[in-house]
Image (cartoon, rainbow, N blue to C red):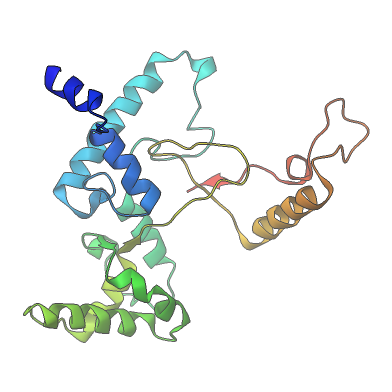
Length: 227
């Protein structure tokens, strides 16, 4: 403490792991191991510890003051099960061969730099699996690694995890392992239309029968299902 106090007195800024984590998040850069999820043993261990902390905090609260995840239909409230998500996505793909077992999904991998710089090309490509395989093979060839076969293109594409930036629409500060809700196309258009009306006309009372003024979002949008 004497050493750190001398540094602070001299005008230096002291930061620990929490500050480092916040800097990585603000810069949009992956922070190890918390941003690597189940793609590596360290990320999986961090998620496990975080899940235990969240579970203990949830169990200490009385039932009336904690979210009921069974009613919200959230199957994994504390730790994301990426393999289950990938299995669901693969099972819904009509192009997947019927002779491939459901448990054939391999370890997910993090779609990060330098691949993320080419994500626009993947979105516009008619065969994104082959484009991704070409990018991975180019990356491996430049580092003296072996070339992957053509059959691995679909598996690489279906098991890739992409980090995204979530921008809050209004107030809100989501914490670690926050629940993200899925929207279908109809609900998405409804939310966007209601949000545009609130932004154009303000959060006025759209219904005179309600005692408390409500915005357009509060009236027309229902709670979606969690992912």
